[in-house]
View (cartoon, rainbow, N blue to C red):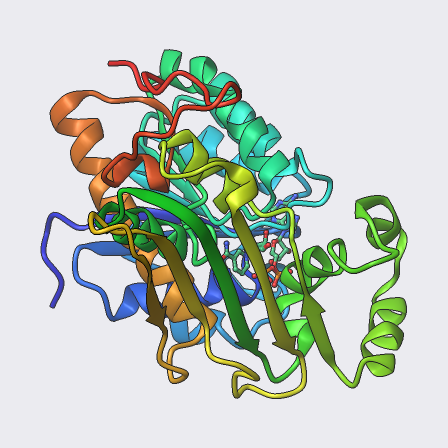
Length: 342
Ligand code: NAD
């Protein structure tokens, strides 16, 4: 039995991560999923949506009580903004300003005044979110961006581990992802394609699902990613941990096998007080999935966000790393840290 003070959660996007979050919430005290949205409509239930009935559906408009709409997010918040405490954004971010444009609409066109987290990945996307600070602050929304696995879980761990060192030489994030079928995570795989040699956002946006399938066939279902444009770099720089060019992100994704092809690691290398070069290495257990490592931390950041929003009246845009211990590195590109206003 859940507590009466459950946070009422709306999940935007009902694909791999959105449904994974709905499942995770079923096992997490303190939250209740009251809304689930996809591109065909939304489902609302103030007592908590029926997770078991919704999980097998390909699209929400086949659910008996769904409200069909081609602008489901706006429609949901037009009717229920004041009945939602927290939001998890699990939408595709193609083009790169799609999720920032949704956040701006929630602030300017609805009465929502709660806490939002996303699992944005690209540096440019997080920069666009940070630029919305004033709009969100004026509308009393606290938005924590880059709060998935990477950036999010892994970059925040790096920010804490870096505190051992007098100076940081390098932070390397290497992730392994295994999914049985790419169609369960279309947006994730499409966004990964952007980082492959010869691809960019425009090319990927123009590709059909059959084109993606054909590319995956040529690669035996494996996507090897190196030197990704990932927001861990600007988030760690903004927090003064190191320069963005000292952060590297890459990984290996198997789209035909739920087992991870490699273990996920974060390696933080720096100088000790004695002048030695040393490295901390965090390794994630292979039994943990993308849902565990994105949705679990996202819920933790939501809890923290609610506390900051309610007790200190904080609003605006923060990154997940902004909630960690700071470093001392200043760069000409690092923005003013005082980004959050009451
Ligand atoms: P998906 O393709 O499985 O699902 C996307 C969902 O969004 C679908 O239900 C779709 O109908 C819905 N949608 C699309 N446009 C919409 C609109 N205009 N209005 C309402 N709903 C809409 O996506 P996924 O693979 O679960 O990925 C979701 C996001 O999570 C992506 O942006 C991905 O990059 C991100 N992600 C982040 C991390 C991380 O660690 N940071 C890891 C994995 C995925």
